Structure formats: structure tokens, C-alpha cells
Length: 264
Image (cartoon, rainbow, N blue to C red; front, side, top):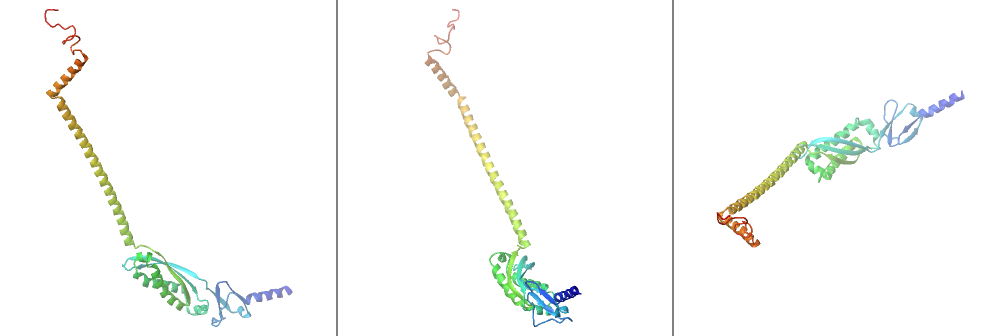
């Protein structure tokens, strides 16, 4: 009997308290559905016999990040994919209002983010959002979102444009331009190669022509009668220098040569 009594007392204490997790706030809902509007439960344990019939609804009030990619038309009316990151948290002092007045709060936050992006992005080109004017666009987004989120009892922390894709039309043009430039470069290279090859062939042909012309002139000169006579005189001069005749030794006609017929 004693053990049963202890068990009942322990069960009573367990069921007559509620716990709010770290980073959360609690909303007390009375039996019957009424919401406590004057008091918000902090983190930790709340004791009270009323928890036997009342309940606690927790809301996470820690900072959250929503990252979404949208497609808007930029200032040149080109479809541009933009990724936007929003940091926010539920107002910890107004979770009872959220509980009683707001449904599907995540959808409302997403809708606000998209609406702000649709208003800001068309003021810029995709290249401006990527380079020089991203901070300016983020400031414009901040002004819009920071004013609208409190309507849902949400606190704004920061917003960033995290990525901007080049419009598909521009990407195609850039790709086609790069391909054409590559083709032009290849054509220019081939043209230069052909020009150099033609020059080399011309130089080779000219060299052959000059050599053939020189050879023809040389042969023409050597085959002329005067040149033959000159060559003959050069040969006779060489024999004369040696003291011999081209016809033989000790006579102008050569050895064993009969000068007069019949005196052999």
C-alpha cells in the first residue's frame, strides 16, 4: 500500500508539470481551448496542478535560415535565377499572438521573401547583381522584408543574395561567341600555316629556278667553241709545264710514232 501511494504521488508530480525546451517559448492553452495571453512560458519546468488538464504548446524562437531560389525577369527582361537567403526568428514575446492569429507562418515568410525579390531584382541586370550592385539590392530587400515580417510577429535578422545565374539567353550567346572565336582562331592559324607553307614553296621553287638557271648558263658557257678552245690551251699548257708532249715522250707526236711513212 505504501509503495502504491508513493507511485501515485510521483505520477501526480510528473503530470502536474510541463517542460519548455531550450531555445523555445511556451504558450499555455487552457482546457477548453482558450490561450493564455498575459504570460509566456520560458525555458525550463513549470509546476502546477493545472497542468493535469491544461497543455503547453512550444514555439522554436531560435534564429532560422530560409534559402530559396526564384526566377525573375531582370532589367533587360531576361529570365534570371536568383538565390536569396533570409535569417529570421519568431518574436519570443509574441508567440501567444502567433498561436492565436497566424497559421502556416512558413508559407507567409516565403511569400514575403518572394514578393520582395520580385520588386527588387527587375531593377538590375544579372551582371549588376553578380558584381557591382549586389549590396545595393540587398539593402532594398532588407528595407522591404524588415517592414513586412513583423506583421506575422517575426523578427528580421539579415538577407543576402547568395547566387545569381547568368540568363540562359546570355549564356547561349556567350557559348556561341566562344565557339565562333575558337573557329576564327583556328581558321586564322590554318591561314597562317598555309601562308607560311606557300612562302616556303615559293622560296624552294625560286632556289631551284636560280640553281637551274645558273646550271644552264654554266653548261652554255662550257659548251661554247671559245670555251672549248680555252680548255684545250689549258691542257696543252699543263703538258708543256711537265716538259712532255701529250702524244708521248721526246717528240711532239709521242713515242714509237713514225714521222714519215716508209721509214719504219
